[in-house]
Length: 283
Image 1: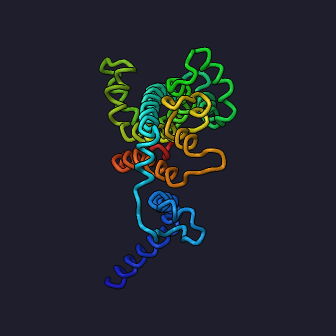
Image 2: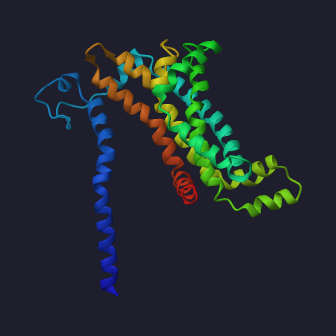
Image 3: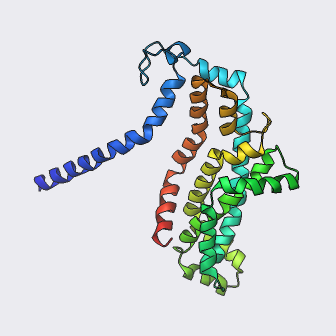
């Protein structure tokens, strides 16, 4: 009995040790960004300095300059606004589309679901040119609202594809009972399906928000004014001038830009894991 417990304990230790390389691989970029953002300029450009250690003192000068001397707070506000609105819009459209594809039976339902997934795979580098004409036609050039309109072009297919798999895991019986009691499809979706599908919705929202927050090509193409650009564009445009890289402020911007995503995943991790695994069962 004791030997069996010891074997299980050592088995768990071995399994955790196997995860260490993956953990180092995942955390190393954040460590490097943090170290670079806290170094003085003198140490940053010292060829004899150790890249991964701080030996000449910690400084918050780069964070201070980023917030004080640039419009980083405006860029971050634009990113939050665009990501929130685009995620909300895409989640609403994707939920209705996913419910229809998962529950309704009509001609071409299988092919339509595949087509939606293929649409998500189309790279943004092929779509930003025709979308630029649409943005100009709508009169939204050089506006963050252009991003709110264009981001759903890749967020809606993604949310739809993810939620189709999750809706298929919800038993049809609970929905059929509501329909028998006189509820409409919309009422059954709102009062029965959505409360059960909260983990899947949170998972889709987290992914959509992350994609919106990190998006670069559309933000670079459709916005140019300093008060309209997002953080991903502003940090690279304003802190890279020709062949001069302000590494300290660049890394400080990257660290601050990671905070909203980290906070979201920390608070909604359980929903994210359950939504992702449940959707993978029949996805």
